[in-house]
Image (cartoon, rainbow, N blue to C red):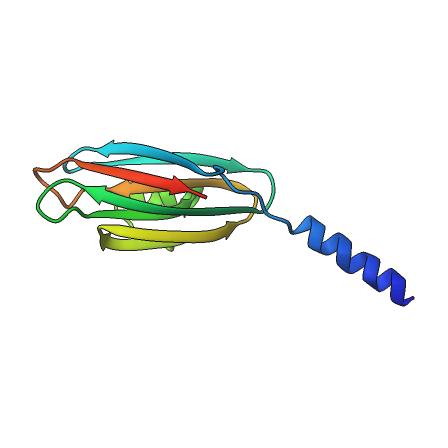
Length: 126
């Protein structure tokens, strides 16, 4: 009976193993003044998403980065308050490391607060 419990535990750990979205890659995006851009992810199993990012542009070199699910993204786009899986606030450099269940998610780079300056946002996914 003890070996059966051990086997079950090993199978459970294997089932919960996560994958990285982008293995050791760097990506750069331009976000227009007063606008936002996003990446869309569809996961069919539990997935780990981890990255460091940096914003450049304007006098403060700042950006807001969110991770939202499908409903949250639609509500956010329509100006409603939403819960996030990650919310950086307005910063220059940040990191996130989140585990996401199967489903559709959006990595949002928000520059709506900047009336004049475009932002360049670089991500290093790991």
